[in-house]
Length: 464
Image (cartoon, rainbow, N blue to C red):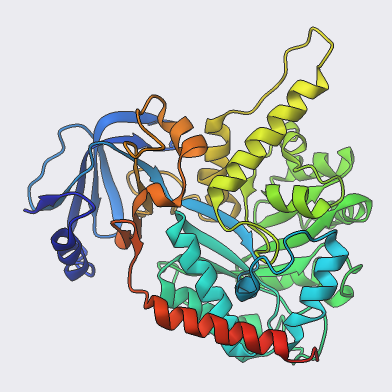
């Protein structure tokens, strides 16, 4: 038995050496455990046991027999965050347009411009950088809305990047908006499933991706009965982007009539929708992925994240990053932005009256960023909470760092106090992916050279 904390190289070496042993036991002791399981809540001075890749017990005084013991006093254990929508291939173009004026400016510069010159290698580089950054900031599950699948090789490169980083990845495949491409989508999704997603017990899962309407890129990319049948035949879910305003509201009502709303469908953004559309969403159990900073900063439809509308329809949404060409990379910012915006709206709506504001809490936004994100991605039985029987996707957050001490409220500290620098360790499927504050198995100089070379190629090649 080895006992140390997440700064120990020796303990890390032992865990990595035993990483393929299904009987390996890891015991975290003495932590504040924010389970996000409604039946377990927050446990103080508690232990968490992992066997193989699965959480098997949470409590106090758990047996240390045969376990590698991680002394976790002074830390908070939480589920890993779940990103429900990120266009990962764009990542070498980070913050290239930080003050983007509107959706049209993004579409024309990125989707009609840069995207058209991407090679499979550029897809790989962008997706890899996004996934590693996600892990660094505590995101253990990332849905990559991969809408630049110009050839089968572009799709292969995006999937391989998820594999190589060790993240719990969801590859959501869609053809590109503009430029030349092989027109292999959506037919090629069958090949992808057979090649990369044959097992249900693996880190990667597959979804179909689509747009809400034909306004941006034509009818072939718009969700409807045909794509719904494709997804049903493949046994996969669908994520639909660009769900805004009256045209998307009309589309949603049509989907309701066609019987193609439901829990396996995720609608992204959902800003400016009508009450009738929200009613159909709520009644069907359709899931929602909000992008708080994207809606507000880019100014998508109302520019207000649709949290009140979702909750009124009895939908608890997941959260997402969206596009790093203009936005932040981490989930802490999404939680804080949504928390602040909703509470501002709640108080403003009753200002000057004697009515109490209906405000969300820090627990709500952490729930959206973990358990509800997993549900939105179709993975609620796998991840999203620290629950015995689920996979061991978790964060070790230092509660005694300068910006977090003293620990008074664990959920409040995670949501309002912490950031990537406080994450000492990240485990995905029971395997350490970040340790002592550093993402593992990354040759940073080589990655940096790869990212810069890809960026220069994309920026200096004329749009196709």
